[in-house]
Image (tube, rainbow, N blue to C red; front, side, top):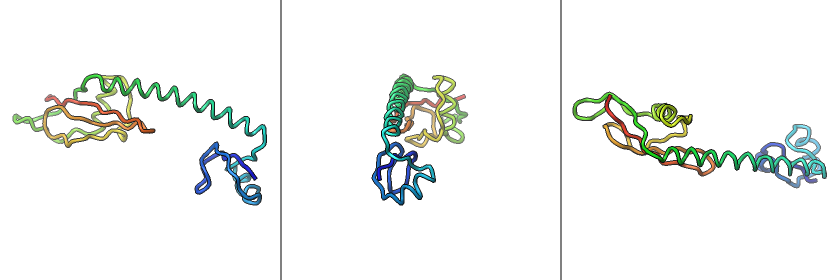
Length: 148
C-alpha cells in the first residue's frame, strides 16, 4: 500500500514523502496515529499543493537570509568592552554581546546560539564570527572590540 507521510517517521521517511508499506502497518499504525494518509488522487493533489506553497516560502526565506548575510558582511560591528591600559579586556566577548550589537547597529535579530566566534577574544581589535542560518547558509562577519 502506498501512503503519504504527514510527519517524519524514523527509518521510513520524511514528511510529504510517498512510501510503500505493508497494508497492516499502514492500516493499524501509520494512519490511526496520524503519521500518514492513504495515497489516493485527492491526497496526492493536496500534497503537491502543500509542496508548492512550501517551496514559495523557502524561496522567500532564502532571499531574506541573503539580504541579512549581505548586510552583516558590509562593515564591521563595534562592541564596547572595558579594558586595561595594555589593551586587554576584562572578561571576553560572548555571542550574546554580538547578537545585541547586531540588533542595535544593523537592525537584525539573530539568535545567540547560531553565532560562533572564530578566535578567543581577550584584547581590543578586530575579530571574526560566523553565523549559521541553517540549510548551509553561513555568514562570516567582522566585529571590532573597542574600549569603553
